[in-house]
Length: 139
Length: 486
Image (tube, rainbow over the protein chains, first blue to last red):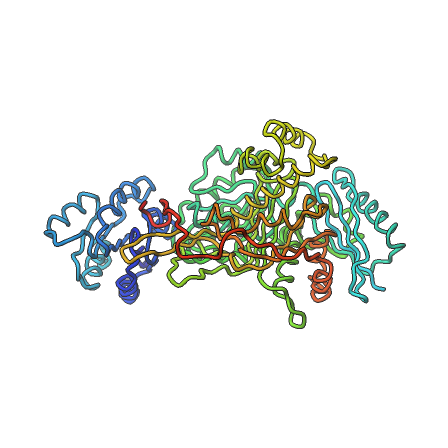
């Protein structure tokens, strides 16, 4: 079976590099093809990488509180670029302050993200979600 | 004496350089009008006759040639995403010494196919997708190219998973060559195998197609397109050989009538610790060609790039008069400066050609204000610490003001984001030997290197007007570097 390909990176003017490296390693170990764009990644870079690598999912991290601004329009741009129905995940500290996570999740889902992960989520949770959404365990 | 003849078949001139292997010295150089339409041998014979007037009769033991005649190596490239595989295809073609007619990205259309049919390129380079990535685009484009109906060779260097399918589509109608992917993994550039293939095709069939084979009986070998010879010379000059040291990292500019070529032999990696690199990694040996920047055919492109006001001021001529003179030059491409006013205009044009072409070639450094403080975002090569600039081209080698003109390749305080050299020694190819030395270097690298070191004229150091870097030179962050305007 073809390995699933993931595009990961930290969006916007965000330079938090540690979580990104942990996720990269965890996804590799879990058997994915991973294209890691590192920190300070623009929406356009996520999309360009996903096109060339024929990716199955884009996983966006945001740690500095500006995630909502940075992520707005990503789904629309994916549609425009022909990445129809590509899986979009977002996680980290995606908003400023202590907001109700259910509200945050709702807002990001309205922006077109398939899943939104709360601060402190372990990589295993993301991996399980990927298996489910990409139907990797079905024969 | 063991004399070697080095020939550069150009579009308008055949240039010859003679060297003596025994004394490791330059015997002479000469040029004569090229007559590709009839017989290149004639232009060559005329050039040799002029040469032998200076040197006396020479018996050449070896003769090598490079060529940019009949439009040079004309290529069309197609990739997927413009900034990624299409850019890699462009890098590969330019690095192989080609002249790029057009770069297509994404799926091509019927109109594009018509354009290709009309352009009749020498080679088409087809890429797209990382290995294991997108295959739809390259397969679509292969089908389209297969239907063009002009029998140019095609080099396929995209997603390896699509290579076989592309070959099957193209092989019935085109000579098809499959190479390693120019971008096997995201952000990883692998252009050497493609360049090698392009060069082999050039030797095998382009030379014949361009009527150069008639001259080839006289020649031990036509080795490469002229830009490749130039690139070889620059690499040798920078790196040296085992026994003869090179001069170190350098930037070279060749200002021509139609185009301005820039070469860098340098890593150009970020110099500061808190710098994030964005975009494709750049090749250590990089060539760019500015098709809209040239002293005659493309003279209007220089004005478009820098503005008539700036140019007129630099030349010390009124705006209207400058515009009038520029229109004249575009219409009379063989015009040479006759008096002081025309010379000043040519100097200003050459200065702006260098400024524009080098600015486009080198990288940029932008400041980004993040939650964690100031971060720098670099894209392209950082050439600020490059200490040597080599210049060639008629407008630069026939003037005494070369140093002053070449200084426009240096860091400009008005455009602090551009990573041009801050101070640099200017070396001038007064005798027009660089392409010849690139040819000679194939067999006699040490001799070629020693001749270059001796014959390139050192015009001393030029220093940028800008102060040494401080942490305060504020550059506003723009969209693109990090995805959000600040």
